Amino acid sequence: MSEETKAAAEVIAREWLDASALTATKRDFDGHFSLISQKVQVTGMPGFESISYDDWARASKKDFEDKVLDSVSYEGLKMSAHNDKQIMFKTLETVHVNDGTKKTHGVEIVLQLEEDGVWRVIQERVMTGNEIRHVGLM
Image (cartoon, rainbow, N blue to C red; front, top):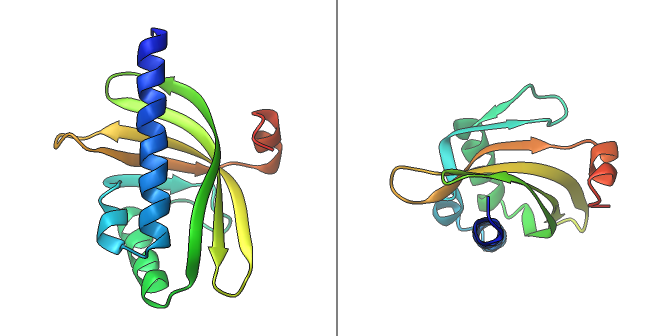
């Protein structure tokens, strides 16, 4: 892939991260879940083999309604791979909770260009601490 297509993929990834952080921080459930594919699979969460769209939506809706989240932010972006329909990258996600605590974890995200022309996350994997350090995010 050319530097131009790599740069374009990075722009798409950054725009998706910005939209994801903004909609989560605003507790905009519909806006946030418009960024998530109904085919999504989340793996690497302690205590869960995988989390489906419905599971994620149900938990997030309750968290948004109960104002559990204060804000969400992303730091760092390590591109892994991309083509015309998918972009894979790693980043650090920090979730600030309304009780003053925060949780930071590395995530590997795969965005997919869906049939309606929207880039949505189709796969998200929570990374281990060693992996986060290895890829240079911490």
